[in-house]
Length: 307
Image (cartoon, rainbow, N blue to C red):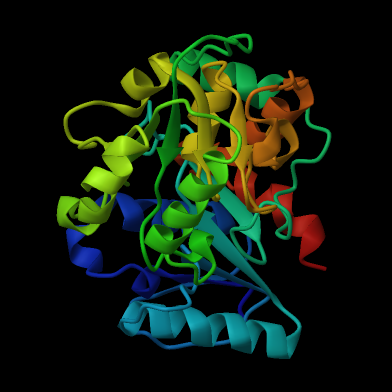
């Protein structure tokens, strides 16, 4: 049996997404560098291996040939008692659009369930990422401003089948129980239609001091500069808020910021300060570069979990 199967076919329209395919090919190169056997699949053919590697995970309410393959691979790997690796976007992508670093995990993309091989990490990776991307961790600031709500894509696995717009309506209603601060809605910049937010631009919501901004006209960092607080369901954008010193509220326990965020909207006017040192060291150590993949460093880090 082959040690590793890397599924280039897990990428939709792979020939158009060289960067996405590159991280998979780099991982395969690293497996070879370690001296283990690897197959790169381009033909949507599921085959058992000690480790299956794919880009992303299986969404629950969208389809496509590559998604069908992901679901099949996950199910077959589980049936044989083998592991599946998920490669996901960087939590620092607000400063790293080219994907210098990506997240690697076993068993899915959810931070509270998957194995990232990053527990109790030291500061090495965080120092590297800080230097490469120019990231600064700012102290928590308590200031006047609006409440920024960061939206997510409909159909993405991180929403866990919830409708983002239904969640938004409920969240605004919940926030209004505890504060009259202005609420600013930022749609997901990767996939949005401002027409979908027409309801939240109606007189009813304007009277509640709610407004929707076009995410193409300002950056997340710019939006955070005037924010008193930031609210999310489960989004890597919450990392940017924490690093910028903005108090964060998240709803889903799978959010990477869960341990450094608030979870109860009744505390919106009384935020606390969290210790973020170990959290950022562990989160940074969940991220890897192309060079880490090519040399086999990522594969070697996860090998103890493949026994």
